[in-house]
Amino acid sequence: MRIDILTLFPEMFTSITDYSIPKRAIGKGFMEIFTHNIRDFANGKYRRVDDYPFGGESGMVMMIEPIARCIEKLKAERQYDAVLFTTPDGKVFNQNMANRFSMLQNIILLCGHYKGIDERIRELFITEEVSIGDFVLSGGELAAMVMVDAIVRVIPGVISDETSALSDSFQDGLLSAPVYTRPADYQGYKVPDILRSGNEKLINEWKLEQQLSRTRARRPDLLEE
Ligand code: 6GU
Image (cartoon, rainbow, N blue to C red):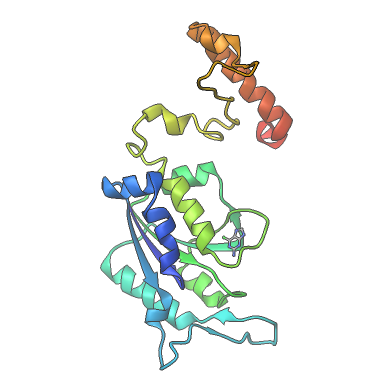
């Protein structure tokens, strides 16, 4: 899959391209990430990308032309399955969306900034608006990186242990069970005996019980869905 990211801060994306699972996924050819600096598509000596809002609100608004030029250039080169926009008033991102986006071939991801973008960009180009939660970030870049990370780890083959991504919290609508490693006894704090029993059936039952009780205690909303 290919993701084209439109941003005012392309350098920020080295946080995902240069580390951990996303880096490996790119190295293995599961994902390509191209960043595009919106400012490169702006006109004039000052390469202006934002302007004052009509109607006299506070803050600045991202202008339509630089973003439109960049999107149109990309669309002339290939077909896109989705043009996403990161914004706090979008639909809240979740595991289902990560799974769904991971099956697409080409995605444009536009990072919001300032007070917003000219509404006509949304109307003309954006297929889906996505938020990562009910709080406000300084820009859409961190949200975009959160989404790319969540998407890349569910592409089949990216995580070598096939079952690992599937056992993530939320993948089955439940939080994950607790996990332990050596030592089995840390200053009297012991790993539950059942995990060391070797009885796979009992272990799986225990894990499911743990998942259910955790979800009930911490995220009862997930059980209602
Ligand atoms: Cl997608 N963008 C911004 N600026 N703030 C956010 C967000 C997105 N999601 C939650 N807060």
